[in-house]
Length: 263
Ligand SMILES: NC(=O)c1ccc[n+]([C@@H]2O[C@H](COP(=O)([O-])OP(=O)(O)OC[C@H]3O[C@@H](n4cnc5c(N)ncnc54)[C@H](OP(=O)(O)O)[C@@H]3O)[C@@H](O)[C@H]2O)c1
Image (cartoon, rainbow, N blue to C red; front, side):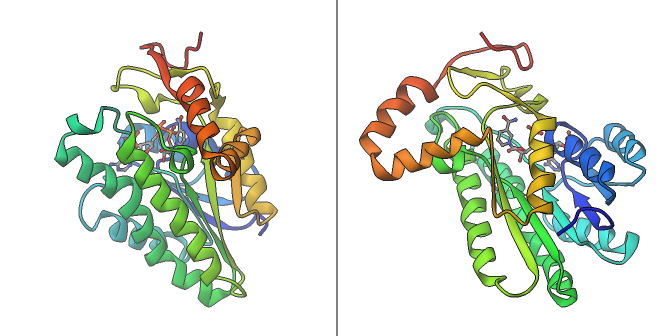
């Protein structure tokens, strides 16, 4: 599906990957609706892309349906949904606050599913559209200290795969995005960016470009960086080796409060 001329809704566009994606889609000729929680940053991105800014805390009950309704009200349709808004939760699982667990699942898993439920029927009816779900390599590999986040992203990943099967022949597609570490404010307030030996952080702009290319080329899956796709291959074919490599290279070796800093 060509990005140019489509009406796109990007959630979590007030920052990081969502912001870069909104800018990239607008640059390629889409009409972009940008969603965020922070009014000032969301308005600023809306202005930058010449689009409409929509606010909403997706952890709140009914917020995704409400956002979808307001988004549909702007141009009468959404052709392209980039469900990108997401939060993290880093701690040993036994110390995670149950309320925080619920909130994380609401934002990272329930809200994207509810957004798709609200916006997909219109796409199917028109016979054109795409749903892009921003998951994470964590959902394919698992990550120590991020068990609930990894579970939420794995759920989103399976949701995308199932949707894709259901959508066969409808003219509507589903893409799952699987980034490794991305240089954004995502880890702020959680002690800073975890510094892993691998993978090194990539830029939000690199993820945004990969998303735009995947939409243009109807790709089902986007890995950024691309070489990360070998991780689940190794996990599937040699799980013992995978776990040894994961313990050696995948664990955070220290936390930095400096955004994006790496050794
Ligand atoms: N950074 C990484 O290393 C990485 C790796 C793999 C996957 N991802 C995924 O990429 C996506 C974007 O993350 P990012 O790295 O760009 O992080 P980011 O810069 O922190 O952006 C997160 C976005 O999600 C929004 N958001 C968070 N909680 C929300 C809530 N309760 N309701 C509504 N919006 C909410 C934020 O809105 P406000 O800022 O307005 O509050 C912001 O726009 C997430 O789904 C994340 O899981 C990130």
